[in-house]
Amino acid sequence: MAKDRPVYMGPRLRRLRRELGLTQADMAADLEISASYVALLERNQRPLTADMLLRLARTYKLDMAQVAGDGGAEQTARLGAVLKDPMFADIDLPPLASEDVAVNYPGVTEALLRLYTAYREEHLALADRSVARADAAEAPDPVAESRRFLAARRNSFPPLDDASERLAGEAEAEGGLAAWLKARHGLRVRRLPSDVMAGSVRRLDRHRDAVLLDDALDGASAQFQLALQIAYLEMRKSFDALLKDGQFSGDSGRRLARRALASYGAAAILMPYSAFAKAAEARAYDVEALGRQFGTSFEQTAHRLTTLQKPGQERVPFFFLRVDPAGNVSKRLDGAGFPFARHGGSCPLWSVHRAFERPREVITQWLELPDGQRFFSIARTVTAGGGGWGAPKAERAIALACAAEHAHRLVYARDMGSSDPTPIGVTCRLCHRTQCMARSAPPIGREMMPDDYRRTRAPFGFGEG
Image 1: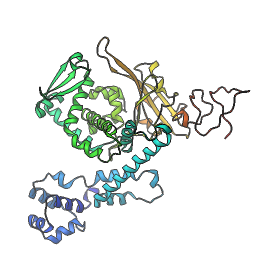
Image 2 (image 1 turned 120 degrees about the vertical axis):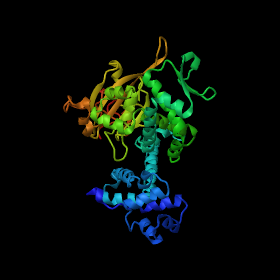
Image 3 (image 1 turned 180 degrees about the vertical axis):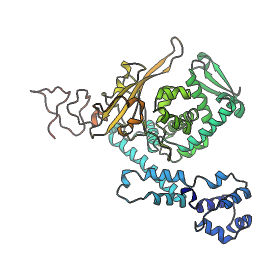
Image 4 (image 1 turned 135 degrees about the vertical axis):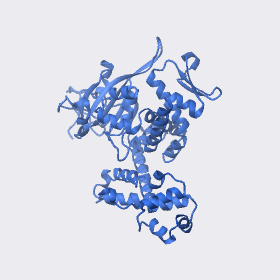
């Protein structure tokens, strides 16, 4: 049985010994074993027994979990996810081989993972530059840099999920986020009128030891702001470590990415990974039902669903898009491999653009791209701001989409059968559906026909080929 399999932890034992500042002889003396046996353990020529694990923990006053770790399970899952990339499809990579590498050579594994992430980020940067306007090609784009940073990591940051899960447990034991802030940081939570807040919705007042919140915030928004403040207080080092490997041309891109990480951490505090992932499956990804269970808004919940790609605990991968009534895209999050346009708007045939006609109603739709890929999408309007008569507010629409192969797991697709999908394109400039009545611009690479003697029903006519 799997549980009887010998446990080899040579590299982890070597790293632990070095962190303790010990030689093999020192550790051997402490554990009352021979130095040669320590060497055999570190070279994985002997398994680490349960008795030896206990001896290590007792001798060096360590947590058993710190010594045993996860047996390389997380590294194995991360490496396995990377090796599923199509670029490795022609290489014979048995799962056991990648597991052996992850367990026995964690340093090499981490190096490979960093290289792959850097490759992904650079690949996305090249895609951006290839479609950007020539006059702006050399200008830094902090928004694009931040989006590349998230996309290269599939909007999944397990270290933040782990830290947030711990913080959520502490806050629950303390009686809530406000009580935790008071107990841990000596900060009171105060709700103040909007005019007193002077344009801020949250402010950390160190002089008065208080977190100030605009009293116009609804319950979900107020809780999110408290969680966000906790994330900034508790996860600074985690943010810095994650951003260290990002590619940013200036401070603006880095700050936007840091803000995205903080929002990720806040959402993970309100919706801890394990509990939320379990509930998502149990409720068939019903966004409204999940929001009520966790006390979060529709948008917060939909956003969190895009992050459930923790190696070994993956759920349905989603793509998230947010647009305003003018079609401007203010947020893109990709966990589903959706080939969205990195510049400009999205296809006008996508129901997310019609959601404004049916406010607060969930609209479902099957989508098909020109290459035959199919996706299932839900769209709904959401409101930001407001809270009182005359208070400014913004209406936006969000879409949540997954590949067709996952749609059966969603409550929204259960009664839709296999209805005909709506043919959409990534963006007009990259879509070659010549008969589309909604087209706003001709596609790149197609010659337009003159309309001196003939005008087509579609906005543009094209020659053959």
